Length: 134
Image 1 (cartoon, helix red, strand yellow):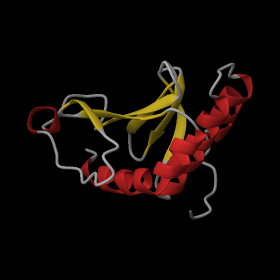
Image 2: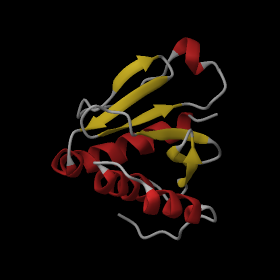
Image 3: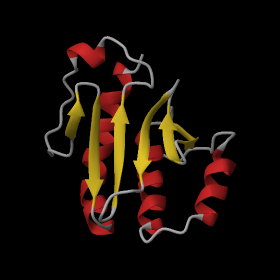
Image 4: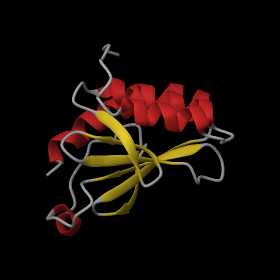
């Protein structure tokens, strides 16, 4: 993964994580590292009371409410757009995505080993997702 400088609001995420009381906190921190390492254009912030990721706008949010582990909810922006009607074809050879709607999917990780095993495929998936952001 390429080294990257922290975006201006990384302090907000660092502060959030420093005070986070969650059984999968280490997994949240590792997921952040994996997502930010996927593409230098990805930045992060706190949105929806959770670490969230953006390029020009937010497209992914850490799901801290999973019953086991954590998840990453992927979408194509907060506003409805053409993708919400038509959908989009995102290559997912590892079968990580569980589609919730035509414009929203989730990826779940039960533990650090599952995230480590899926990290390269998740990063490839994110690189496929980003060009579709409006």
